[in-house]
Amino acid sequence: MNHVTTLEAYDDDRGNRIEFGGTVDKNIRIKFRGRNNVLRVATQQNIAQLFVDFDCDDGLVEIGSSRGVPGLRAAIRVGDGCQVRIGKNVSSTTTVAMSTAEGTSITIGDDVMIASDIQIRADDGHPIFDVRTGKRVNAARSIVIGNHVWLGLGACVLGGVTIGDGTVVGMRSVVTRSLPNNVVGAGAPAKVVKRNVAWERPHLTLDPPYRKPTAASVKKSTDYWTLTVDPDSRPSRSREIYAGARRRTRKGLKAVRARARTLSSRV
Ligand SMILES: CC(C)(COP(=O)(O)OP(=O)(O)OC[C@H]1O[C@@H](n2cnc3c(N)ncnc32)[C@H](O)[C@@H]1OP(=O)(O)O)[C@@H](O)C(=O)NCCC(=O)NCCS
Image (cartoon, rainbow, N blue to C red; front, side, top):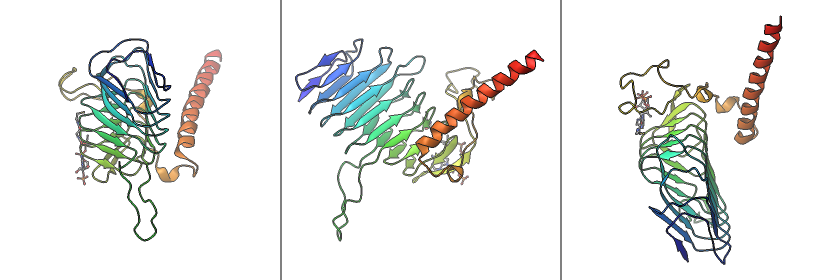
C-alpha cells in the first residue's frame, strides 16, 4: 500500500495518481491500496484536512475550487470503481465522513454547507442477506446532494438518496429517502417539515447585522430562492433528467424575458 502525506502531483507504478497544481503538507493522508485510482483537486482549494482511502481499483475523487467560504475537512473511503465528486465552495465545520463501495458514487453540488459530525454513506460497510432466499438486502446505492444544500449538525445521508437544491437537513436527522428542493427535512427518518424555504450562509453572530437579518438585509443566493417542486408533480422519468430540464427552463425563461425587454425598449 502506498501512503502519501503531502497533497501534490503524484503518480506511482500501479497507475494511481494525484492531479493537483499546488502543495498542501498539513493534515493529509492518502492511501492507495489498489490500482488506477485518481485524486483530482482544483488548484484554488481550501482544504483544512483530507484523508482518502482508495481501498480497491479505479476509484476517483474530485474536489472543486473554493473561495470565500470556510475550508473542507473530509475523510473519504473509495470502494471498487467508485466516484466522489465534490463541487465548488463546499465547506465543513469538522471532518465529514463519506463512504462508497460496489461501484457507487457520491455527488455533492456547489456551495454546500456541511456542519459538524456528518456522515454521507452510500454503503453500509458490511453485507446483510435474507436468510430464506440468500439474497443480498442492502446493496450500496449512489447519493446526489444538490447545490446550496445545508446539512445540519450530526446529520446522516444514506444510500439511494437525492437531496434537491437549496434544502436544509435538520440537526441529527437520518436521511433515508430523497428530499425535494427548498425544504427543511428533519427527523430520523427525515421527513419534509417545511416547504418553500431558502437559507443563507452569513453567520448570525459572526457576520453583521448580528440580529434578525431580513430577506432585504441578506445578500440572496437568488438562484436558490425557489418554490419547492413536489416529487408527485415531477415527470415519471429520473430526477436527474428533471433537474436538467428545470435548469434549461430557467435559462430559457431568462432568455425570453431578456428578449422581451429588448423588444419593449425598441417600441
Ligand atoms: C432544521 C432547523 C434549521 C429548522 O429550524 P426551523 O425552521 O425553525 O424549524 P421548526 O423549529 O419550526 O420545526 C419545524 C418542525 O420540525 C421539527 N424539527 C425541527 N428540527 C428537527 C430535527 N432536527 N429533528 C427532528 N425534528 C425537527 C420540529 O419539531 C417541528 O415539528 P412540528 O411542526 O411537528 O412541531 C433546526 O431545527 C435545526 O436542526 N437547527 C440546527 C442547525 C444546525 O445544525 N446548525 C449547526 C451550525 S451549521
